[in-house]
Length: 364
Image (cartoon, rainbow, N blue to C red; front, side):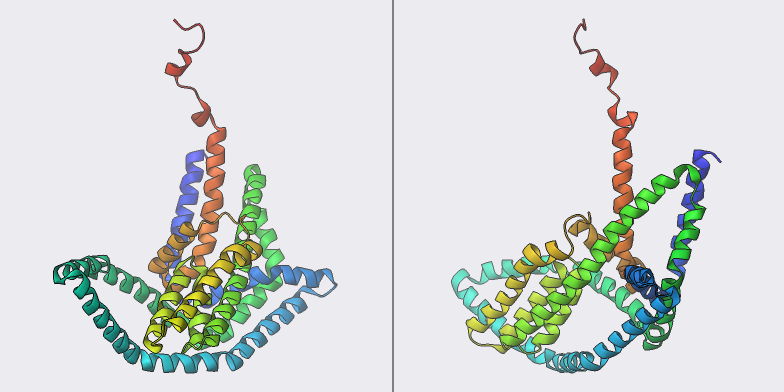
């Protein structure tokens, strides 16, 4: 098969894979979760196997432990968060009304200082920034993700299908890897293995580290906001930490919600400043200590690239796309760097133009 034939073959395979992903997006969620858990927990299974524990028994123990952990989280944490969620949803109109009153007072004060004409211009600019097009786009994206999530996040699939998928993948992980390795073209086998190892380092380093970062930030924000007396501080802080895997976006959403509740709840500026201080301290700790320690800077996934991948995955494939976004971004990033390195090693990059060659010593 010629080089063009290989390219067409792989292009057709990728196209078929994307088409199947698009058609089956509504049923893939429990399988994707099971695959992600198996991938993350495979090193633990290898350690148990190295200590003379049969692979099937190691997979069963890990699956049982994760199931018990999920049940414990549901029994201990979910009721508290659910109660706060329900109470928060019931009090949203009250908070909105309080914010409107304070905004009206602020606009009246602003009008006294600037004049009606300047205030009208400011309102027009704000409407332009958060215009109907931007709101419609955001609503469409969130609706796509939420719609996919409602179709997929059902208790039955997560409780039944995901543990089964996780167990069998953990049990047969080495067999699957060996089989796929046997399919590699012998001519390019070493190169492909090198890129797969690089992808695994990037992916495992980012996912395992980011999960730890999200949990720590959720605890930090939740306990901090609760300590300063913010209503629903636990749920606001916990959710802020959990969505912090989207760089900057998670913190900004939590900051806006927390500050909005604080402005509606408190009449004094000091507790409002303390709420803002919790987010500032959390961001400083994350940027300088937590993320560098747990994730590191060697993963090669830029924050802008992650944000784009998450938005694109959510827009195309719903919640399943969000889960697949980071692995896809890692693969594309590693392959992109490999292609760029090969390009710089090729004559297409290093070849000197003829016009430059004639400008050297001895040219007439």
